[in-house]
Length: 76
Image 1: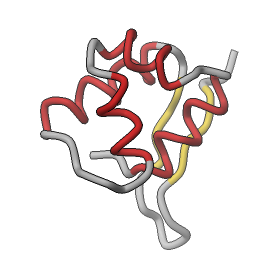
Image 2 (image 1 turned 30 degrees about the horizontal axis):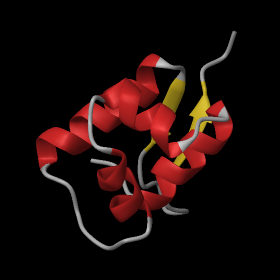
Image 3 (image 1 turned 45 degrees about the vertical axis):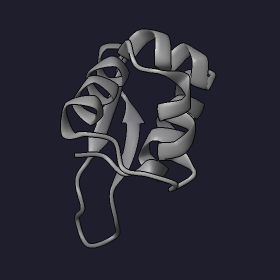
Image 4 (image 1 turned 180 degrees about the horizontal axis):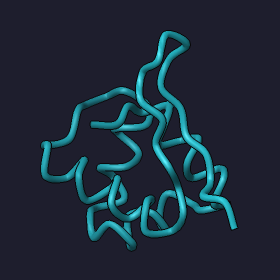
């Protein structure tokens, strides 16, 4: 599972627009917009597609570890 802040941060690391992510995840751009602003929670399948698209581009998701969840780029 990912949270909206991780999605926004991941896009920023990749310098991707919402449209870029929507295209890569094969979801509607409106889904990305609504998720990132907290208007609605996408289906689990959709969140998986978003996460897989971002991971495929080099994003690593960091789980809750006491300081909160986060993201970083893969090394090398």
